[in-house]
Amino acid sequence: MRGATGQVRRLQAIAERLRREARVPARPDLPALWFVTDPARTPDPVRLAHALPAGAGLIHRGFGRAAAEAEAQALAEVARRRNLVLLIGADAALAARTGADGVHLPERLAPELPRLRARFPRWILTLAAHSPAALAKAQDLGADAALLSVVFASRSASAARVRPLGPLRLAQMARHARTPVIALGGVSARTAPRLLGTGVAGLAAVDAFRTGTGFPDAPGDCCPPERS
Image (tube, rainbow, N blue to C red):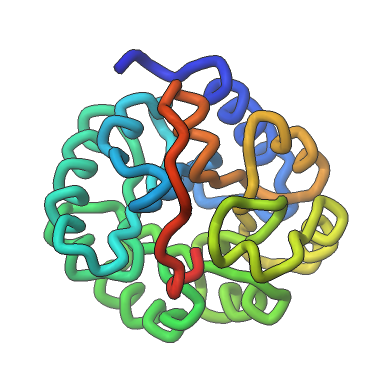
């Protein structure tokens, strides 16, 4: 696998500009560009990780699958070699075993964040958010960033049940947030320019990295009792 393709480089350039212009500055080691795994839509995340630009973030979501630990271990190896930031979704024990850089928590696990901060003070800790109340909770709990979704129409099964925020509503929510906001949901090289000027500190995507690195289309969607 060669390095980042043109589409991924465009996403990176937009993400870096968002970071520079963000309403709430992010901690220096927080990436502006994030790849979020999905067992159905990105069935080979290790291969995709090899195509990410140095400094990008990677959120591994195992959804309790038997293969999740081996996959996370492989991603941790790639992250170390390629200077990527790896967060493990909803599993602090797995994050510790793999030497990951932190944990990403769904909204339902938000109360765990202060305990994790006390035990792992150097970790990057992010929260999923789908509302102004969730953004306020991210601030109150000391999250390093909130992944706010769903911004644009998305193939995610959970996204099908909600109306996308769109850039205007996203900007309104980011303007009132006191935690760096990362935009998630339907983000691609085509839609990402619409995030400029919204005040968010970066972007996250699932499908954009598969299509942007020449992967074939994946059938169907997966998993989400878990959101983000």
